[in-house]
Figure 1 (cartoon, rainbow, N blue to C red):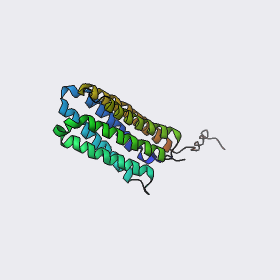
Figure 2: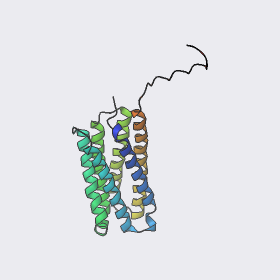
Figure 3: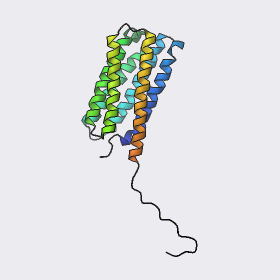
Figure 4: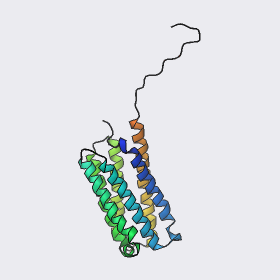
Length: 195
């Protein structure tokens, strides 16, 4: 079965690269201050959501997979916009924002993975990304008094894992999209020889 995600391999790669870039920025957070952490998270969630939404919009006809991905994108854009456009206000809601974003997007990622109908390895990779998001949200809810520095480290660790899964998946998708079974070119005859 052809990979349904294969046409989106580049978008999957850039979502992974964005997550890893976000992790690097978060690990550098103590150099900037708490308000900047909210801003960085908001920008990441908004851009990642826009990428997910764009991937879903390129699917025709609409399927359960593309609808779940579209909802994931809208969730990221809305929560990210609040964090990036109103960082001073969102700072007081940081734990709630991260928990809501992680749980909602994680659930939608798992729904998308279960509906995509691709091969087992691709489905497992997508399920792992969704599970990581839900684990992040559950951890934040279980320890709401988590310090900002510890929260930043948790976010960074999640983003590295999530980004690595997406980058690895994008490489696999690009390889699977390459034509297989090309006939080997005939060996050239010796100079002056005859068939």
